[in-house]
Amino acid sequence: MIHFFRRIRQQLLKENKISRYLLYALGEIALVMIGILLALQVNNWNSQRNETNAINARYSRILEEITSTSTQVGRKANLIDSIIVGENRKSLRVLKSNDPDSVKTLHNSLTSLTSVITVTYDMPATTEFLEEGYTSKITNPNLKRLLLNLKRSVSFGGTVDEYANTQLNTLIEPYMMKNLNYAQIVKGSQMIPINTTEDFTRFFGDLELENLINLKIETDRIKVNYLNRFKRLLDATAEEIEIELNITQKSDS
Image 1 (tube, rainbow, N blue to C red):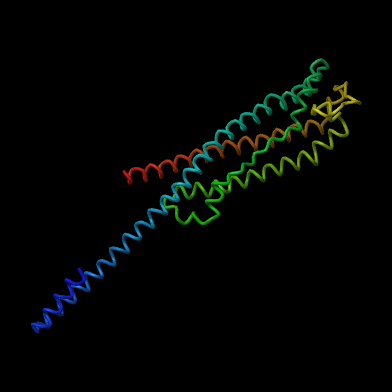
Image 2 (image 1 turned 180 degrees about the vertical axis):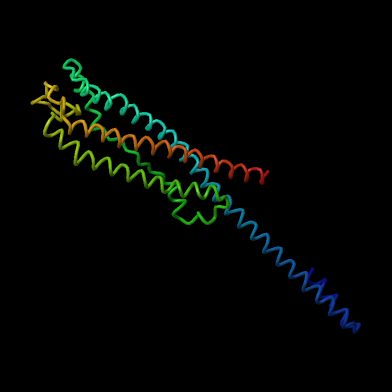
């Protein structure tokens, strides 16, 4: 092809057709520029396609992670809620009743006072995606907003856990050490209760115990509300990711 163009140029020069030669030269330059632009466009298209495929591969991992986490979050919210309704509130009803016969149930229901269920979740695929600068490459503004909210929500879960653990360490356990047999209440597998608490009627009218149980209910209610919001956020994010993946699949087909 190069030799062909060269022969044309030489023929035009021999025939002293300068004007035609100049026009031909300009046309040849234009063809070269068009070829370069097309090559650059193809290269950009390939680079963009490779980047899109890499992002979609990460989306798939994030989607799998979010779907699994959402299932766990739903189960944990139900578990914490059942403890609030089934145990801590039962303790309050017994204390309110002043019934010596029903007070025996405190032996079991007070166990939930020391139950601290974590609401912190490790989401490495999502965290890695956000921390490695992929946020700027998200073209879907709604998905970008959801992922950033997801990052903040995961961080907030750690704050909730920290508060619950502080409450356990500074308020609940000190009270139990002074007023109850810890081994008897928590029923640890390696623990041996010796000086057991038999007369629970002495806790009737105990304002400190009442406050501790209500505080625990409040804290666990915060956890349940957080988990429910977190699950809704996870499900909404998963839905947006599925939309992005479906768009890519349709464009490739």
